[in-house]
Length: 98
Image (cartoon, rainbow, N blue to C red; front, side):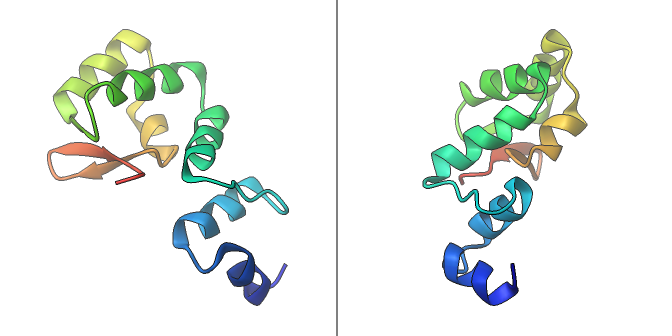
């Protein structure tokens, strides 16, 4: 697929461009919710548990709380951040949908 086709399909939305490149053609998630679900599906069970637990806190989670959650779930902070669902944001982490 060329760049023009990618832009046409995604409407140039950077989030969808990344999702399309990650998931592969012709998979375009119809909603942001589906895209986030696909990211979680590619993560380990421990990372999914940690991200889902952190989500209860809201759109942002303090790094010390995230560390505590990860300790309990045996998850890896690197893996949670690598999913792109949690992104570093000052002293905490925010969700990709913010």
